[in-house]
Image (cartoon, rainbow, N blue to C red; front, top):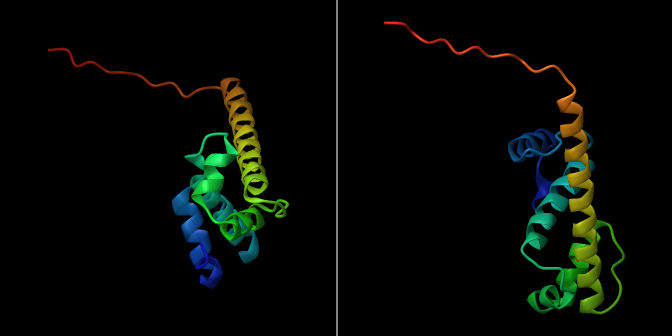
Length: 121
C-alpha cells in the first residue's frame, strides 16, 4: 500500500478502525501496521513451501515485502520467500497465543446474565 504515507493521521486512524487494527500511535506506526496487515493478507494464500511464493513474485517484489515485514532482505528468491513465510507463521502464532490468552482471561470474568421472557396467553 504505497499510498498509505500520503494519508493524514486522522485518515490512517479511521482506516485502521475500519479494518479492526490498532488505531493509535504516530503516523509512521500506523503506516507500518497497516502495511504489515496488508502483507499478511498477501501471504495468507500460500502454503509453507517457499518455492510456491518464489515463482509468484519477482525478486524485487519479495525484497520490498521483506522490507515491509522488517526482516532480512538478502539472498535469492527462495531464501526471501522462506523468510517471509517464517515471518507470517510467527505473526500467526503470536496472534493465536494472544487470542487464547484473552479467551482464557474472559472465562474467569463474570458473564452478563440474560433472561428470556415468554408471553403467556
